[in-house]
Length: 362
Image (cartoon, rainbow, N blue to C red; front, side, top):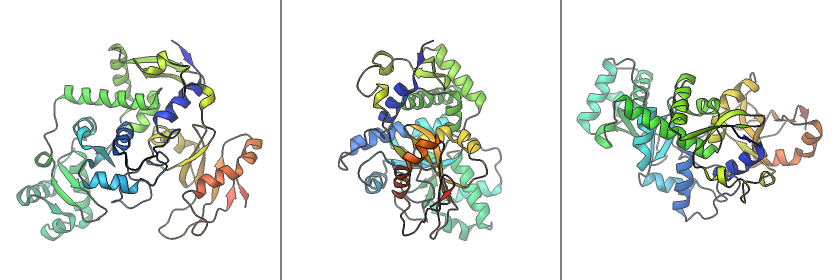
């Protein structure tokens, strides 16, 4: 089992994730969709409107709201619930794969579910407001039932713009029947694990579990099966322990190529929200690390999560309580302006005062 240095993995990971080399042309939709495919399912930015399109934060040098909105409007980005029931988007051509892998079977089906489904199938599609008018149930109960039907890929929420009153349609009638046999689901889950590992370069089972929402038992079985098939290779990274790399990954044969040298890890601080691909891979551990704090976003420092931005989110103006950096004292002081600048990219001074930096009042 080969032992790797963190720097080699980090440099390649930041490159594949689009952070080291962001997209530069808003007119190149093919490049945008290729990066989107690598990071999907892509959720709307945390603490934004539910109808907002997904975005590749920090992965473009241009504002990508318009690009992603245009692709979604054409129906090429599909909204559904993945990774334990989270709202996110995938490309239309990959919908079957991710729906099969993340489908959550309904544990109960009451009258409300049956009546909602019957109404939608008879009408060809209804909005939530129309369902509220037609059905003798509380709005909250209707919303919960819709969510359960959506997680099971029985219903589909059609979201092509920022309108809150979206249409609900029969999933199979709009798209396809999802395979119900265990073999199809296993194959889809394996493919998702392979895609995740490729995007991460090196991945641990803990990261797979945090990102996917699957159980540790499921992850262990998937990894063991893929290793036995020779599609994943077990390896180690100093300080990170044992994980896997995809068989045939270029990094296995081209470790010293440009972009894979440890010296090429960008020295930069990125602020990433809770919906971000990289945050999701570490979220289980990050929640433990910052337990008891109201975290707004996390700070990726030179490719590793080493900080957080805290405060109480609100619809109106609110303060940033603290910018925390888990670094040696001298480095905390040296990177003060850089950290504040990273936070100010999102939280402007007009609406958000920064009260502290590593516990010290500003």
